Length: 275
Image (tube, rainbow, N blue to C red; front, side, top):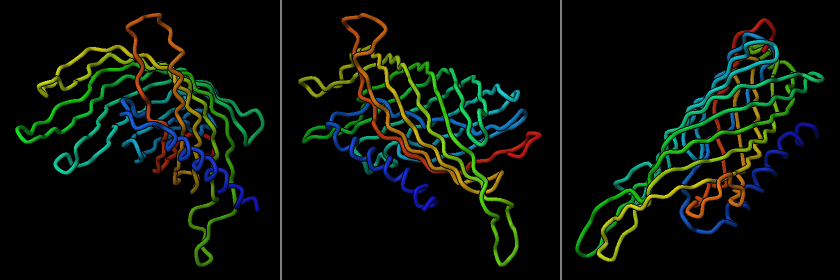
């Protein structure tokens, strides 16, 4: 039963995300958030890296624990929706990086809590094909740069299970798994251009400033050996368009994609203690 419960929790969470996704309207999204970076440090001198692929693109995440309680994390995310422009009407691309500084602590092992303050920045665009009986051309429906300060709280548990064995041989020591729930509050500042087709079907750029507060609960699960694990992450960005810091009548908001899901490999290296 504990094993069944362990797998049911993420499935229920993922089911709720799918319900939220289908409740959204069909207007185009202008921002696809990266995954949440929540390393499972246990002591000073550890280096954790992972690579993920998912609904919104590809990510490389990393972190280093400077002391037993202080860590620095970083991430690069390449947003990628639509693979072949020759066969699709629209493609989305983004290029985004973030860095964070945080404190982590084991209040009662194997449970831990971490809090990070960070900053992300990048750019994105959506390229669209247009064709009619007269013309056939492509243009960027929107493009721009963005900045994203954030605060993140993560809490979780690291478990060591029974020995992995194959034909009676212990190949990888103990099975190690982790369950991490993160809560990330972001303030997205977007400066970009909309390209609308005018009455003559010519793209006409219009500048816009957007500011969005969005909150993302995120579940991260890893399982494998102490140094190499399979990683699964699912999240649900919730857009609070009414929470803006600037009172600007020209300020706009942008729609944020409400689902985040990735799989990948997680590597935990170094440190004087067992990772």
